[in-house]
Length: 110
Image (cartoon, rainbow, N blue to C red; front, side, top):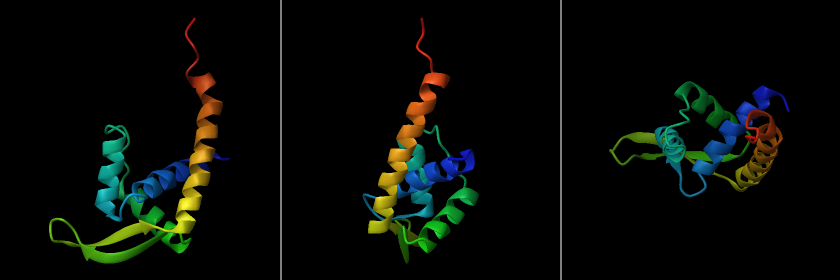
């Protein structure tokens, strides 16, 4: 898998995982990813929204307008059954990728 595909797959997996418990708006997705990675991963809006639009087009997420906790109108996304299946594939592929590169990047100390 080309590196750019792995990057997209990682973003897709993070976004889809963020939506497995409840629908979230874009900022909520960004906040969830940052919190779950102890602020190690920050996704830019310029990367998130094109990914969400692509995932919606591909049927992995659905969206609807609602009101945020602060009373603002926002588009909320929810993962679909097709998206859950895709998350399973992305998670499996990402785990295999990590297993493959870990011995190279993180060799055991002697």
